[in-house]
Every structure is written in structure tokens, then in C-alpha cells.
Image (cartoon, one colour):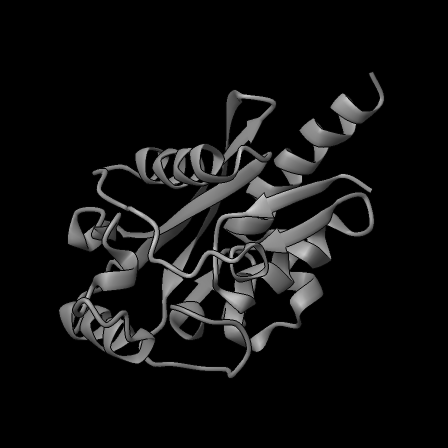
Length: 195
């Protein structure tokens, strides 16, 4: 079975992506590859950050890998937090503090439209490919649910009355931004495997 390095140390993301990719690929995390340092994220776009992380790992290990960057883009906040999603309330990347800041900034705001956007950067045999996934929805007035991670308890995707944090993993993986981007990655990898 071929293996791909997922340039993250986040166990939630590893689990989510492994469930999506199934048995076709052996997904290995950075800790499994002996990499524990923080990856560089110095770009001002999600595409830039995803590529920067993937290139860093490819140059270091010389193995096929992919990285992703995800942003929550809130309409009433001019697209913020966007590329600063993980650090919205500070460098310690505290999900609760991040959600609280978003809710505070939206207090009294009737426009609660938002979207999650994920960009996956794949480096396969030295060539770079990008895949994007978007989930449109609204920011709830308060947190609901205990599943998921990040901003999941305050994001309600269009067409549903539950937040991502209230959904089971299979449903969330099918409709989420990361799920959609990874599905595109899977379709691409499957097409390569059959040639």
C-alpha cells in the first residue's frame, strides 16, 4: 500500500482524513515520521500556507505528502478570521477563545453568513496540485455540540439544523469543507492509480 505523509500533528485531522481515504493509502502523520516542530505558516492566503507546509515536508523527507490550511470566513467580519482562523484570539490557538471572540464580534449582527474553506496542497513525485473545498453556512448565537473540533460548535452548514459539532463523523466528513477537498484529492489519487 502506498503511503502519503499528511503534514499535520493534529490527531483530529489525521483521523478525519484517514476515514475519508479508507484503505487505498496509508496515511502517516508528522509525529510518526519523527517531525515534531511547528510547520511554517507565513503566507497571507490558505493556498500559500498549504503549499508552504507541503514544500517544507517534501524538502525535508523527500516523500509524497500533502498539507492543508483551513479558514473560517465570516461575511460580516470582512472574511475574517480567514488565514488567522487558528490564532484568532491569540497565539495559543485556543478553540474556545477563538469561538468566543467570533461570537463577541457578531453580537447584535443579523448577517451571520460564513463559510469554511479548505485548501489541500499535494506534492506527488515532485509535482504540486491544489484542491479546494467549501462549506457554506451560518454562525450560531451560541455553541452547540461536543463532536468535532475548532469552530465546529458554532458553525451550522446550509441545509442542516445541527452544527458540525452535533453531527456524527460520517455525515460531517461527507459535507464539510475538508471532506470536499479530500474527496477531490481522493478522486485525483484514484485516477492516477488506474493509469
